Amino acid sequence: MKKLPFLLSLSLLAGSAMAQKSAKGWTNLFDGKTLNGWKKLSGTAEYKIENGAITGITSQGTPNTFLVTEKEYGDFILELEVLMEDTTSNSGIQFRSHLNPEGNNGKGRVYGYQFEIDPSARQWSGGIYDEARRDWLYPLDLNPAAKPAFKNGQFNKVRIECIGHNLRTFVNNVEAAYVVDTFDASGFIALQVHSIGKPEQAGKKIFWKNIRIKTTGLVSSPHLAGTYVVNTIPNNLSEAEKKSGYGLLFDGATSKGWKGAYKPAFPEKGWEVKDGAISVLASNGSESTNGGDIVTTKQYSAFDLSFQFKLTTGANSGVKYFVTLSENNPGSAIGLEYQVLDDKVHPDAKMGRDGNRTMSSLYDLITAKKSDRFVRPPGQWNYARVIVYPNNHVEHYLNGIKVLEYERGSQAYKDLVAISKYKKWPDFGQAKQGYILIQDHGNDVSFRSIKIRELN
Image (cartoon, rainbow, N blue to C red; front, top):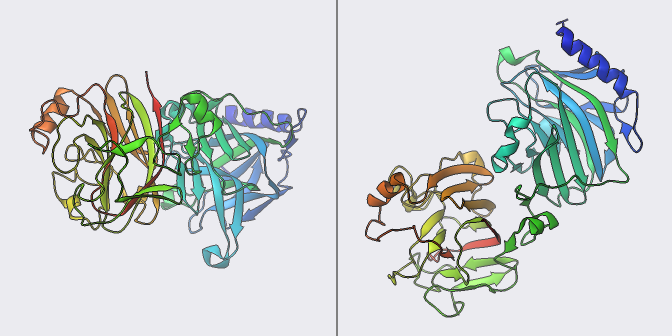
């Protein structure tokens, strides 16, 4: 058996002694000696007890393996400590999770919320993943300040709070992720040994200790104002979002707060508010020839803007910012554009330079760096985010991943404008403030959960 380093052995032994104690209101899920109350599902990786810690050992030829609580939990606060040997793989802690007995060719497949353990250079520990279902809910690109919280080579304190629809994670007392979601109200807790693809990854260990849970008298930890919240409830603001200063730009039921570009009121045709979405209706596939673009009734300078969009096959649209409506040009109004496009079908994806007209790109200026994994196809909702900081640093996100950043008004920015379709517009995109615009490009595209927080 591989020997543990002396200091690690002492740490594990200390954890064993601590596991025998239960503070008021807390219940130990691990007695420090046995796997009583747990069962193995889905894979064949080994779990055993070493020096007072549950130890998972990676193995080739098996899918993800989970050590699962025999009991299910609804609202709770879970605390434990974790150490992972391998920094080239990852692991996780399932919560409010379930088993599909038909998955993995009848071996069963675990699915549900997962606290990510990621010791790699990506540093996504504490992010929330939806195992075997929706993929990433909260990649830690959304909260970069929490990335350094997880420390390799030592035990890290994990805290997971599930209270109502609020799912929150903490790493070494640092707030990592905050998701508001309604998919699961209860389920089991599980420790994951991830499948591996390389022989040299076999035999690596993950240690869990001091596992305890509280299910009554729950009090949420303080929320750090400004830490981003992923809220999957359409057109909804959680209490945390409200306290951080977010507001809805679309109420889910009316066109309040919007008007036609170059028009005094909302367009009488070409747009529809239905089923909690505001949608451009299909016409001839051209810019602003039906209902025309719509813009906010208020102008913005520095802001954090989020929205969801759903494409139809081959569709094209966009969300523009710093739109001044001063150009009075035919077609779509001028502004910096977060491109909304079906890259696989629409020809615009192959135009421009180096893909700078593809989804999430700064249209005709900067290409969004994204993988197919983080692009949801037509018919599904994508999550977009644009942050314009007071210092003119700008970031675009797609489904939680930062895909580009730039400095508005910098020399590098001006050089890009000079070789773009916008070169004829003096000081393009450099206005102090402007409207936010949703583009009518003649295709059926829907938007919802449009929210904004002004930054000072």
